[in-house]
Image (cartoon, rainbow, N blue to C red; front, side, top):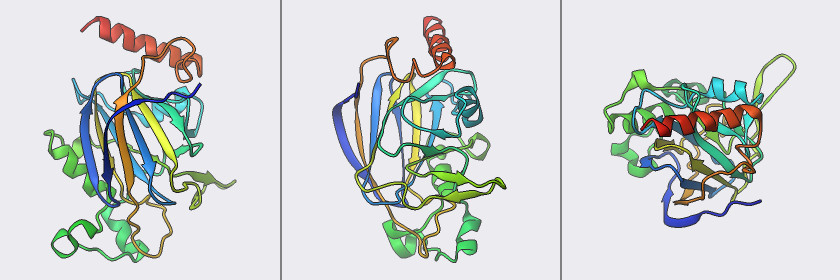
Length: 242
């Protein structure tokens, strides 16, 4: 069954930019790629206690997967479900590639353009973007954790080497998250660190915010595996204690 959110707000995030918002439990976030090859770095923190945050190693381990897609949950380091991927046109998103760092520019031969030179056409890294957003909430370098790269996908060869798949995301591809707790969401549209483009790519996304009904026992994410049912039970206990 497709879940279609009631959309209350629409905006756009150009390529190479960053954005954050506190979203309530039951809110939905739909991202729509404006161009092929789009990448969106995502970090999640508990809005109530930011020390609780997205934990990708636990997220992958407990759902027995390398790529995250429709039906998967995004777990905190407390074993609770922060968000669920309820719809996904891409068929998988990278959870191990990390963030573009300042050093990648020199290695790739990309030109560094500061804000004073390029304004919104500046070329910043995902690492720098996240630090700017964290500072708005009194958080900093010590609060960084591994980010999810939505719309991007990596392949692994027999030697364990990672290879970026440049044709994975098409223009118009959508992914929808449903938030299962009150969450602080941070996004950036900086390139994936393994993007082989000869020049820094500016690829933006459309953003839709809305609401979705709470999951029941037939929900695609809650019923995906026994571990997810236990994760939602952890949420229920946590909410009873509030």
